[in-house]
Image (cartoon, rainbow over all chains, first blue to last red; front, side, top):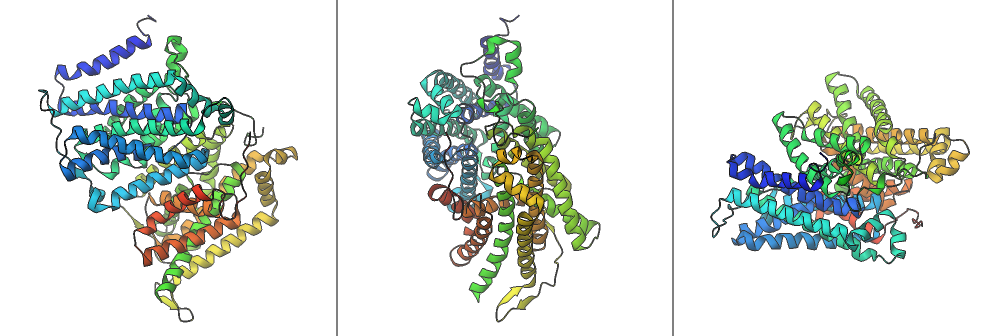
Length: 332
Length: 293
């Protein structure tokens, strides 16, 4: 039984199921939902690199997601440039802003980092809403359906496969990053910055790299999201989006690739259930985030791991949950 | 004339920012944590006072007291249920994640209870809305009330911190938690009261501010950002700094909005947070943080 439930088999089944899904003739709405899954998996992986592995709790990922979407969408809208050319620009814009954001982040940590990036994210949102002549303001704008013309495939299916292909590609990239010296450097600076520095980890380089990588993932997701929706508006990239992504990461498993895949999938599924029952998204995802941090901070993937040890990953698990007796420790 | 109008408005909103910053600072000094849900406490207090005053037709003062008491109790309950179990981790990320999740839950609950998106509740004015002459300067009478009450709350709070037992406990814990525990303070309890008192100060400012603003579930977050901007401007661990930071932010915001561009009122706080964090991280009055190894 254990061999059937190995990580590789389950992974093949999971991705195989989604790759074959359009062939069995699902309708466009379900195809749209299934296209959101890879986008959220990409977001969760990027956030996990920054927060889970490198330990930098930044609240700017939703803004990077938005910058990717706006970068690609606005060029399509204003200059009628095809998606294939604007997509790299959107991704590059997200990487550039993310790397710039790393500069103040180098001097800050913990609460200061969290709140500065939060202020940055709110500022980005404000620009998206108020720079009306360029961004079309709060109501957003629509973009033309993407044409896959030389390949005989409909827009919906083309985007579906594009999203899943990007997701699988980035999954391998994440696995290689985590397995390389970059991943080890991230974990070292997360667990003890000064110890890492004295071991020769260049803090400047690796913090900037963590921010740039997560911005790259968010940018790819943003570009795909803009193409998929055919609409870009500031409301999709606010604090609620950030809570969704954080919930995906914590629920799936912090500092885990399989956890990111699980979390991304669950976020899309739960969002649909919540919409179906007309329940408050804020209470649902805020509550999920809070309950998981409190009750199962290691995420759902940890339950699987404790039963099937073959699901262990390199550099797995988040160091932040080790209780430490210090000044803030509660008196008994 | 225009300048005095802007200055009066700036000082009034600044006084409210100062009160919010005060709540953030006392919690930060004691626990090294910035309470993300602080703005949500402000928002809840405003709605609770509205329910007491408008729905149950209680007097303004009774509504104020009920709202402050309830907010204090809710905050202590949240401390016990959500924050205390996470205070034992050395890493701050779990408690930060908890706070952001919790603030969303509180906002969602407020939206369910007091109206949906874009639904604003108005609080009846406390005094006549007629502007009054003040030695040649026209000011709204409500602003005078808010400013006076805010100053009174600040003085009351400083007296409490300096002269009461609870205040001294809070100071001792903020100064050195380990030493405070060694001399027999139950610092866990001090943390609890600190969270409660921080929320109570936010509640007072919410009820004072309520007649001047429209109540909506999203107001807590934007006020939290402004209160935090005021707090970092003054130095996150300085109480006089929080008050000065609040007044400076309020004035800057109004003057920038009045003379340059109205849109600046919303971004002023973000710009302040950015600039302070990058150039003077310890703020105007704060103690320099030393790096621990």
